Amino acid sequence: MTSKQLIFLLGLLLPLAVSAANWDSLTPAEQRLLKPFEETWNGMSEQRQERLRNAASRWKSMTPEQRQRLKGRYERWQRLTPEQRERVRRSFRWYRQQSPEVKEKIRKRREWFRSQPPEKRLELRRKWRAMTPAERREFLLERRDELPAFH
Image (spheres, rainbow, N blue to C red):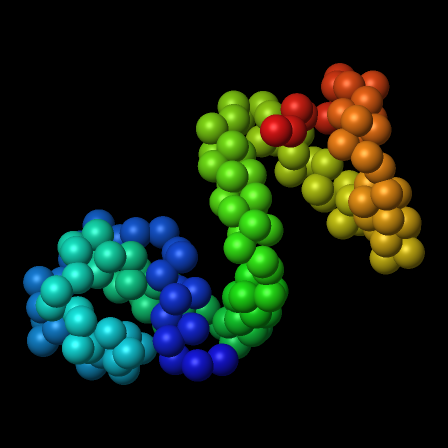
């Protein structure tokens, strides 16, 4: 993973409330992590600087295992097509707008799915992917009391 890819990944993390006015105000550790942005840093928006500083801060506090997991997620993200990425973004925006109750249903359903043996998860994924959009809607309608509504 290149430094620029790593920084992009880190930039996806939540914003920090404090922003740097210029490159020289960054700590040496932040400068090392954010080196790919040195030339453009002072021209960046405050919001972008905040996101990148927060990402650098979170990266420093991660364990090696957490960093490895995050790198893997980033690599999977990179393999997605633009359409798939947009679908993920839409789903995430939708999720953030849901009530705590719906979010809890989603979390429980995900936990249930992840608790299944790998063969069962694979089988469920295959069945879902084999369904037409109409079959998926019917499946969700039949289970509307069990599952949250997905859009």
